[in-house]
Image (cartoon, rainbow, N blue to C red; front, side):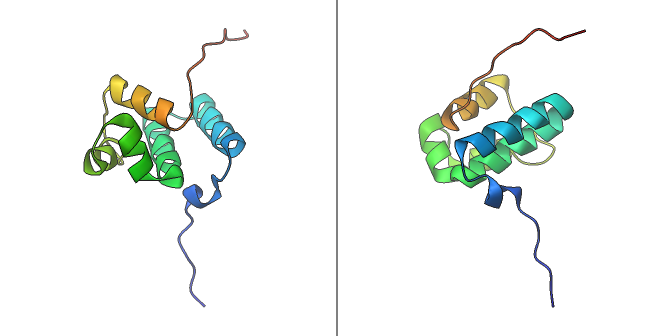
Amino acid sequence: MGTSKFEIADYLDSKEMIAEYLNTVLMEGNNDDIINAIGHIARAIGMTKIAEETGMSRPSLYKALSEGAKPQFATIMKVLKAIGGQMQINPLSV
């Protein structure tokens, strides 16, 4: 019996699950982890839909969210808005 590759995007099936996943990565991950997470969420929602909402082409979107990519902050903000997210700053508890 073979095994299949685990795809987190297959489990990001609700706004709540997406928010929980992204918030966890934002708290615990590094820059690359955050970009990868945003890519997983975009794939879960649909790259075509995200491309349309951001005004980017699908190839550009895949490239911006690929492993090792260094997308511009404006690109990240466009994608966050398209996936239904927003940034919020909370003070760190010391």
